[in-house]
Image (cartoon, rainbow, N blue to C red; front, side, top):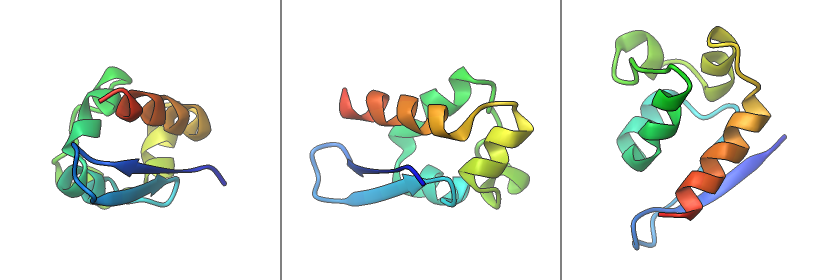
Length: 80
């Protein structure tokens, strides 16, 4: 399973995002990631349904390979 640790906006806060991470956790702890979700059509990041979904479930609903998505997310966050 792919897993990507991130350091968030010059802080020492570390969040591991993987297939099992809940969307709600990402919205709360790493809002910098939202543009990557929106770029593949995941626009309802704050809705009740999305907040309880995992990254893998959200990718399945949107027809996106979760490993490729996690890799793109890691690339994006590393550039911040």
